[in-house]
Length: 443
Image (cartoon, rainbow, N blue to C red; front, side, top):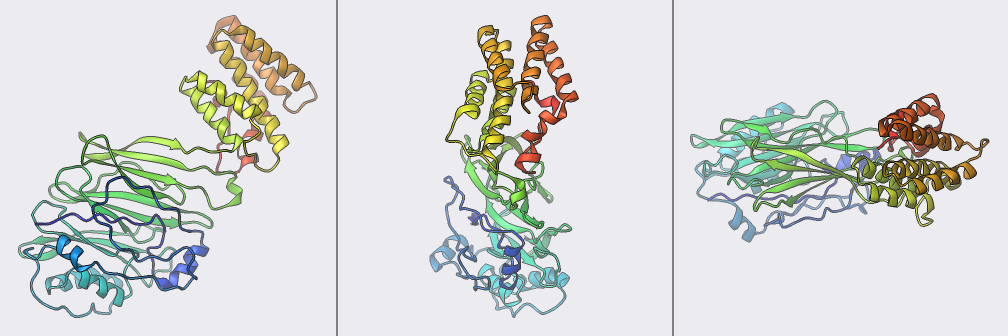
């Protein structure tokens, strides 16, 4: 009887051979922290990894499964496993390896044999190049193989992922995915049943790196009765240096996919904060759909400002008021390059929003107190004086004809005075932080 295997991989971009590790790290793909896993891992596989503290050309460790694990995982009754001892993989063009691997399997080679043969041929995609699990429900394990092209000139190097399935007594190629342009070889992340249907799904990812930052395109490959297909909706390659992990959902046996981006690898991106996106299994579509995109906590003042804006957009005005006040007065928050100037701009924008929210809540006394404070703090010759004027026109518009009128007046003011919003965005805080536009100034 076949059993699924879960591959628990460290969330790094070390899918590549030892000779390329140094160049890859220089390109900006440094290891991320280990993910916090749920109860998803029945078996931990050893990994072929390069430690963050290793010298650039350190040899990755390569430990096969223990005999006890092998007896648990590998099924000797599989119909596609003849007795035999295959020879080494032939040395040939990279595009001949899928057929050569198929022949290797049909001559009696299995996971542990193929693992060694791929390393000997110097095409094994680190850290785990081979996996086995029943993905189709036919009672025989599929073989999943990830290889890289040693002749690739891209960084990370291109490659392919192949799935072999048992058919009429022999293994045959059932799925092949080549790297997309500028992507590295598709690497094995997890192989296990993710939706409690008795079949294993395969989570793979392909790295792509720019001058400073690396991303991963993640897919969930599953069987749909006649073919393998990607069942993850949307793209994941907007999350820099991601940590990819599984977490149990509220439904037993079903797992969510969590991806946490850890920030751009360039000082020009400004103060960074992690962002976590969550994909959950949707029974109707049988796909994993993104259900949440949530920034992780940050102690930067500008990020507290962003959180306050998000709370106001969600009509959580009590939270928004608390966060705007914190952005104004909390001395324990971190600033970026020019604390005094940043605090002045963030404080002015936050006070403007206090006036807006208090006015919307018809707490007129509070709104007038804040507006009076702004008139004193930001006199006519102050760079932030525009925020006092914008708050005043909002309040006048609201009192005349309601929230829509107040908002329209404030947007018109911000549109005609674009210089007051520029210091709150990427000009000051780097390209990793959003610009604020006139459309953003009302809840």
